[in-house]
Image (tube, rainbow, N blue to C red; front, side, top):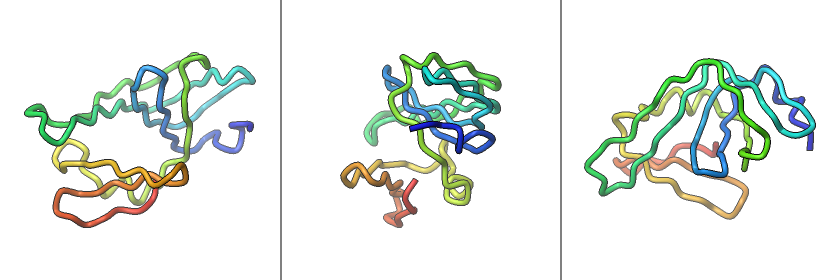
Length: 112
């Protein structure tokens, strides 16, 4: 599948080493090498970890294709409602079709 329809859109990239990166896809090639702008790395901690989840800004970011595991579009409305550093986030995976973000208060977000 080509990533061309995702160019100039906000995407989330999961890497083979477990990183979660969110940014605007500027460019990609047939080897899945990618250039992201306004890139943020989301470090999601387990529920019982004393260190809170956080975001690290990286800005312009080049990803080698052999490190990319999954690429998907970001639901920007849902993403804007989540405070990644304050909310306790639990990830719930329902098959391979959706990942839902569940807030600690028990209300569900939408599929990302």
